[in-house]
Image (cartoon, rainbow, N blue to C red; front, top):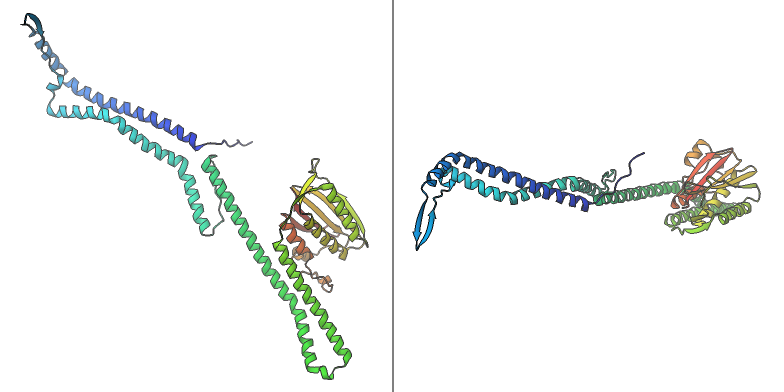
Length: 400
């Protein structure tokens, strides 16, 4: 089991360094001052013998004087410094000055050293990390991470910077995904428009060229065919508008009672699947499931109804809907007893305007699962496809 990181503070570190600075300054000052005083003592010891002899000779020359009937004893004294050579006297004076000046000098030196250590220990690494990160972000390079282990103010600043970088990267990836999705959508839209436009072009050219010679029945038949393809074009345009609105949709999450939501899903499924046998299952993943869910119910129902409509198209006789709460997601799985998904379907069924080869002749535009996928992702979830005795589609929505 890893150790829990300890929260630190730059203010506490600063106080420690100040105390260290004072102690080091005093220690250095006393040691250096003591050294210079020792050097002075060495110079004094060189002349100690001569000084003692002189003092002994002068001791015998002391006398007594009388001034105004007052007896005054006279003693002769000599300062040992008078015995120093000029060079030793110069050194002695210099050592004396240094022994006093060393204290402010030691404070200045220790201040510089302590400041440098404090900067290198506390500030250097995070400032370099933040500076490098800022340069990379300015160059639109978001493929990096900021790692700083100290749990102090600068560590929290680095963590906030890392969160900002992740948010920028996620936003860029989402924007890129949307652009790619829009590009694929436009390509699929252009591809599917080709057939009705080709038919309309051919039929209009035929009418222009052969109308005088064509019987009325043929003209009516051609006009009806053109009308069907025009309606198909209108459906494509409406679908594109719907997708545009889905991209711009804003979620309105509200607290929803789980029991009421499950009952609503069950009733909706029973109403839609009137021609098939409909089963509704409530699965419990854990004992302490939340009673209240935070969801946009309109989005949930839109996806659910699309999945049921898709299952109705392929089911032989039975459709099953199961719901559960797992890892903070509301998961709704709609399955049928039809032929299931092919390998190609599993990879491409959620793409816009996709139709399985065997259903290409049907009237639907191949947008149902794509719309479900977009709505699930807008709600912080996902859409998955699999085969389980038929087709099974799971829509997940962030619910807590």
